[in-house]
Amino acid sequence: MQINLKDTIAAISTPLGIGGIGIIRLSGKNALKIGDKVFRSKNGRKISKAAGFTVHYGHIVERSTIKLKNAKTKVIDEALVTVMRAPRTYTKEDVLEINCHGGIVPSKKILELVINNGARLAAPGEFTQRAFLNGRIDLLQAEATLNIINAKTEAAFSPAVYQLEGRLSSIINKMREDLIEFIAPLEAAIDFPDESISSAPGLKLGAVLRKIAGDLKRFIDSADKGIMLQNGISIVLAGAANVGKSSIMNALVEYERVIVTNISGTTRDVVQELININGMPVRIADTAGIMDSSCVITQESVTRSLAFFEKADLVLFVLDAARKINKMDMDVARKLKNKKVVIVINKSDLKNRIDIPGIAKMFPRAPRVKISALKKQGLPSLEKKITEQFFKGAIIPEDELMVSNLRQKKCLEECYGFINNAISIISDKGFEECLIFEIRQALNSLKVLIGENINEDILDNIFNRFCIGK
Ligand SMILES: Nc1nc2c(ncn2[C@@H]2O[C@H](COP(=O)(O)OP(=O)(O)OP(=O)(O)O)[C@@H](O)[C@H]2O)c(=O)[nH]1
Ligand SMILES: [Mg+2]
Image 1: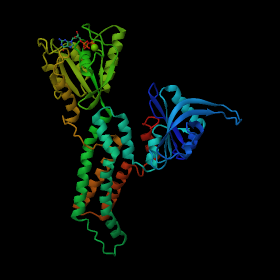
Image 2: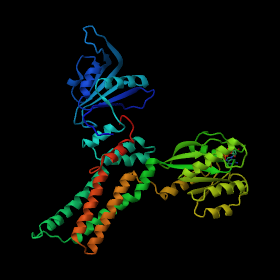
Image 3: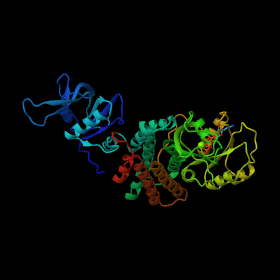
Image 4: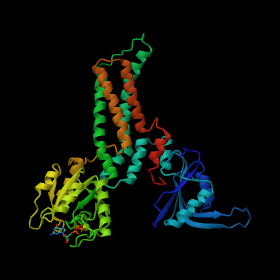
């Protein structure tokens, strides 16, 4: 996408579908002029003359392009139009929001109309991209907006809100200030060697660098957690036929999502659902039981199950407590060799006949949990075992600031590397030029992190992940 701030952009900002209202948003220097062309207010006043942050009632109209005295205007919909004047708007540009009736037809018709009157269809995330390019928010805040929209659980939502508030940005900016404060005199000492500026890096710089390194380390350590909370993890229920995979699925999603019968081979297709396990968004997949069969449908089901095992972040390997381990269980076990596994011993309400040691030996580090999907027993311990695989059981503190995507993590890691190099240079009493170089590099990583010094391709990549209309 070519960055172009001159056009007036427009998009439907509400999801397309049936709803109470639909919102068409316009941003740019012609937003209000286009408003004049498509909106007829009840009181006859022009939108372009309206004060900022005012709402106007009237109709969206399509005027005849022929300028005849009796030319007809066609009413498209009844609407409320909000006028927001630059610079105190989402994009820092003039913004017009048209609230029309919800539903696919009115929103689409109005969008078409504003485009015919001079607006251009906005690219995904282009409103937020403008907010960033026009300097209202930095890149961390723009990415936080995306995370707020996409948050699947409250645990993912809160860190994103903190990030949008600018809490992470202000910590990063403070690091930058601290580094610049030290680097300026050091650089001056090199540029003007005759002047008596103290160039000794000294203890204080070492302490500042160590403090920054500590803060960076904490963010890097929590990054995987942040990323996982944002993206969710995928878990698959795997096992031989009839061990109770679908029953566990239903117990975890808390309704009868999939068919359960006592017939082996009940599940054919893989069924996925999004659930919340202790704040962690989880896509859970129920799969067909692994079995030998000459039936083409069963063979295809098994192939699909195996493909899901491959992709999953965690496998719940389900066994039947009421019978001995059989060949099918062993077949499944062999397919899961390199996976992160939790062994789930289901049907533990029945008389225990399972001989676990053989399987346990194959997965020495896999935790085991006994449950009964039928009696809904042991489910909280199963959920705890699942979260422990990713969060070491830590409950997410309420106001934890976390980075939440790989780009941010990478910038922090780079910066951390340079800061550590700088610390080593000080302790080894190395050259000041080298020290300055490392700190400059560290500063650059922080700049990229908050969106300065960033190239257009990376920006495109970030904003393309947004939905249209944001
Ligand atoms: N007693 C007891 N029976 C269970 C339990 N969980 C499942 N069952 C029964 O075991 C049978 C098979 O359950 P499913 O959930 O369909 O098993 P599955 O692993 O999905 O089976 P396939 O889809 O055929 O691979 C059903 O009759 C369930 O009611 C349990 O915890 N205790
Ligand atoms: Mg099933």
